[in-house]
Amino acid sequence: ENSYKLSLFPNPTNGNTTIAVENLVDRHVQVCLVNILGAEIKDLFDGTIVNNFHTISVDCSSLSRGIYFIKVSDNKDVILTEKLILNK
Image (spheres, one colour):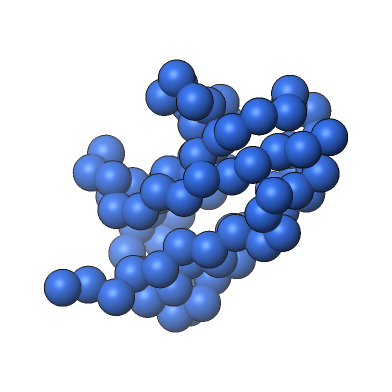
């Protein structure tokens, strides 16, 4: 069993949030923002994770309020997902 971890803070957010992925070192991953219908809204990161604790800052201020998901994938296989609530 893997020990991969995805966390978002603050969550719920009014606009800006930070994504933290843990224990994905040396993995090439894509991180994207997905709406409630499953459509990809924004690519947030595409590259190799070099630290056990990697953070990505996200500006969601241009998005409508609602529920979104952060998806972390590795060659299109989804590794982690986390719900993001946008209040504004």
